[in-house]
Amino acid sequence: MRFLAAAFAAFLLSLGLGAGSAYAQGANSTVTLPDGTTIVTTVGGLNNITINISGGPYAANPATVKFTSIVPSATSISYTGTIAAGGTTEAFNCVVNTVTQAVTGSGACAVAFGQSSGSTTPTTPTTPTPPTTPTTPATITTTTTPAGTTTTVTTSTGAVITMTVPEQALITQAEADQLFLALVGTRVNATSMQNFVAQRLQGLSLAGLTSGLGPQTRNGRVYKGLNAGAFEPQTGLWVNASGSYVDDSRPGSAQDGWGGSAAIGGDVIFDSTVLGAYVGYGSMQLDGAAVDYQTKGWTVGAYASWSASPAFQITGTVGYSNDEVEYGRTAGLLRSFGETDRNQLFGSVSIGTTVDLGADWVLTPSLGVIASTSDTDAYRDNAGRPIAGNSTDLTIAQAGTALIFTGSNWLPYVSASFNSQTDGPAGVDKEYGYIGAGFAAPLSDDLALAFNIQTLVGKKNEGETSFGFTLRRAF
Image (cartoon, rainbow, N blue to C red; front, side, top):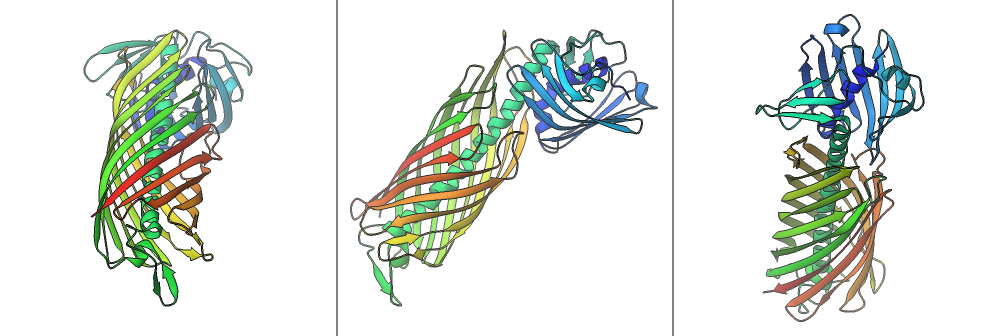
């Protein structure tokens, strides 16, 4: 078994065209070369990519390449996986320097590049080239020059683009960043909506809709807010302003920045049920030495909650957002910049209860699940290079609680939650937490104010802090 330098170099070039697509779950492609070689790419997830090479020069000795991790950085790309051919399977762990093209690694890296392990530079190819091209924004035909230094791409519209190895690496980095940022945006949108609704309902239940919904006694227990006024139908309008700080500290992709949003909505309360809807507009801008990212767009959503008693409450949310995304990536003297669109559909369901800890303290534990799916469109950058889109599916299991002081009209609280997400790029923690604080308070008979702040903890190379004010007018 021997994947010579030309074969792997050609594969590396073609992978650069569609790395972002390769990360998208369920993305598959089949490419047949003029010499009869067939390359079938199957993507089972972020770190589960299988490439089968057969036919042509490989008819008698087909090969299977399995990637378990592809991690780009500012100056290199790390590949981990196995190569199987001729009844033998060998593992590889390779790092390709995207500036010098030097290769370091262990295991089958020597086989993959037809060289010994250690720091090497790919040589002039001497064998047929079996590239593979994952899904890209348009149907393409890829031809690699004998020297393996450029790739000519013919799109379905007939446009011909020639790209060098550094350009391929730049595109690979750009597509990997787009996937990471799509997941960050998905998480921020979905969790902020779920947390916002939880805080809205918390304010309704404990602070009361107006000062007129005071304490009531039922079966020897004292209830406030929604539980006390469940049979008092009431409508209200609210406005919310919020901000967030996001820090992406991944090596080679470090960036940070601020985001903000404004929303207006309304809800109605009757028979222990809350129904509400809202529309909002938000934006976020991140900047770094090699990366810059900006998103802005609209979000619409609805929420509902039903509470039979203080001991049980079930809440559901659903939302949709459409964002314009601007992304730039710099590698040496090369730069890729472009604009695209991202759509996201998200929702959540949670159950909670109220535990009376004493005269002035209440605990509100809850369990919930947040689900989201997003699609980022493919686009062409400033140099006409095709940048693949991506699709992400994310599920977050959440367990949390809030401790609330009820001894005054101003009800301060602290909160904490543990979260576990199902998917994410290699090297990013999937278990993390949020800690926060805030208050809910009536300002008058018809006016109520709520404030909250929370920060992300326990997630390597990521930071996030968000805060917001909500003002509600009851009618």
